[in-house]
Image (cartoon, rainbow, N blue to C red):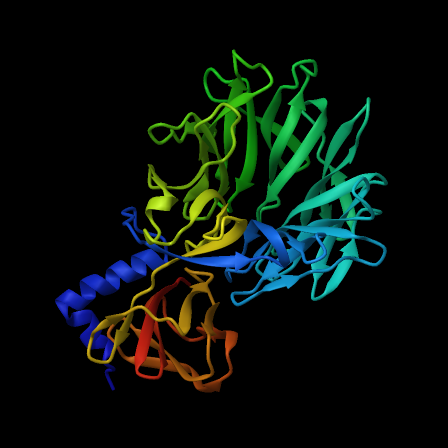
Length: 460
C-alpha cells in the first residue's frame, strides 16, 4: 500500500518545503537563513559558568563547568540534562575535552591545581592512561570511535616541554616534533591521522606550525602567505584540516593576529574574515567540510562572535538564531555531520554558558501542514550514506506511542522499525538493509498525529 508519503513528495509546494527540510537536516544546503537554528542552554552544574568543547553524532556534548561547591568538573550532556562526571578517587578536579560516537570521553583529572593526569571516561568509570604514556602531567584531548586517544604530557618550569602522544591498545607513541621541545595534539580522525601544533627549531621566537601525524611521521602543514605561525585544531575523515595562521603584532609583539584557515590536498586556504573583524580561528570541521570557529575585533584576540563557514561563505551565527533569544554566541567549538553546533556564549542571565544549536526541523501533519515539534525529535541516521546498516536516533520529551517506517523512493513500505509505546528519553533503532538494493530511502517517525521524515542513501 502506498503511504501518504507519496502525497508528501508529489505535492509540488510541500515537496519544496520537504527538500528544504532535508537539506537543513543533513547540512547539505549552502544557503543559510535567519532563525535557522534553535538554541539550547546547556546550563551549569550548579555554579556560574560552563564551557563546551566537543559533541558527537548523537548530539551529546562534553565540557567543563563549576559546581555548587565552586569546583571544576567535567560534564556530559545527553540531550536532556547536564551530568557531572565527578572525579577519580584521589582527585579533586576533572575536565572533559573529546567525545566519540560511543559516548567515550577523553579528558583529565587533577589531584590539585598543579598536578594533572590524562583520563578516559567510559560508562561511569575513569580510566587513567597517564602511567602508560609518560610519568609526568598529561591530558587526553580527543578520542575516535576505535578507542584511540591523543593528548599531550608536559613538564613546566625553566626546561619546560610538551610531548604529544597517540594511545592505542594501552600502548603510546610519541609523535615527535618539528624541531622544538613543545608539541600539542588536538584531534584524531578514523584514519589514525593526528593534527595539532609543534614548536619549530626557532625556539627563541616560539614559532609553532600546524602538523599532521600519520604512519609514525610528523609533517609540517605550513602557514598562510605572510604569516609566521599556525595551529591545527581538527581533522575530518576526508583529511581536511582546520585551524589558524598568525603573525606577531607590530605594536605589541606578545600578541598574535590569527586568521581562520583550512588545509586540503596540500593547500592552505584563508577562510577570510567578516567585515569589522581583525582575527579569528577555525576550531572544528565535519565530514561535509563545514567549519565553525570564532572571530575577534580587538588586538587581544578574545573571541567575540561565533561563525559557521559553509560552501565558501562565512556567517555570523548570532544572525542565525531567533532575534529575541538574549544570547551572544562568542565561540563555536564543534560541529557534527548533522549540522549540530556546540560552543559558548553569554546566556540571557549574563553568565557564560555552553549551548547547542540545532537546525529547525519541520515536521508534517497528515493534512500536509508544516509544524516545528517541541515534544519529540527525529535525529538523522548515522552513518549516511551507509553500506549494510545504519542507526536512527530519536528523542521524546514525554512518553509517547511511536512508529518508524522505512519507504522506498516510490513510497512503498519496506519495513516497520518501531511500533509501540516508549518512555521519555533518547532512543535508537538499527536498520540492517540485508537483501535491499542500493538507492535512496525515507524513514518516517509518527508520534501521535504529527510526523517527521528523514532521507538516507544505501550504497552497496
